[in-house]
Length: 186
Image (cartoon, rainbow, N blue to C red; front, top):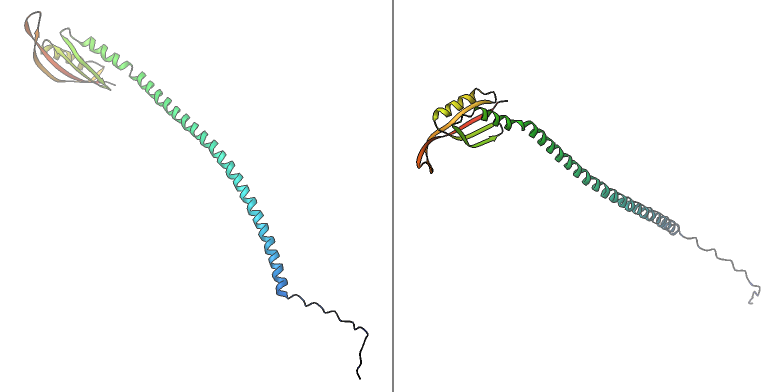
């Protein structure tokens, strides 16, 4: 005999299979990595923005400092120019009296029969080129200069005899060319 059971049979609900641990772990790990990546990206972007702002401020400050440095260099150059000019003025004031003393002493010691063609003063050295009627006049002039307090060294470099044609007299005059080297005392 066959039996048929017409009562519905309760089916047992199948329990879902548990999710494997590696999938759960992998999912958690992936979510943590994504959160960390988003956090790091946000921090890096914030830091980049901060660094760009700092760079812009530093470039602006650098431009201001360069402008001030240029002004300072111009100021220093002007100060150096003023110092140089001041030194030149001081030196000129010191040397201002020297040519006057030299010319005064030369005019006092100059005999009537001696005259100058050229007078050159370079620092403390004086070179005189001139003419005289006689060699004795030149020697007398040199001796007077040697006794002077203004000159420390007097040296007759050369003395040459020369004939000069005088148009009005229609004859030649004998004169002596001379060259003196002097050193200013002090």
